[in-house]
Length: 81
Image (tube, rainbow, N blue to C red; front, side, top):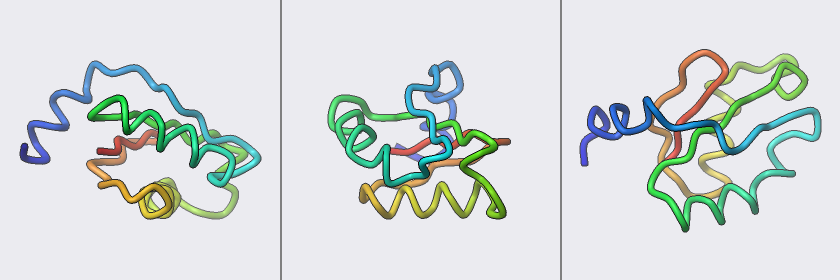
């Protein structure tokens, strides 16, 4: 599937993973499990998680940690495949 098709599918998805003050290390296992069960997962980065970094940087780091593809970031939300 193309990235555009995946973005369309992700539009109506609910956020199922929230990254908070404990950072991305605390959600890696959960996200990995969800990616095994689903094709797409939406991740929300709360203000406490962002600190001095951008959502794009955190999303890319999280995608690398779970060996997933970053489809898009919009605002404080990212979609991983």
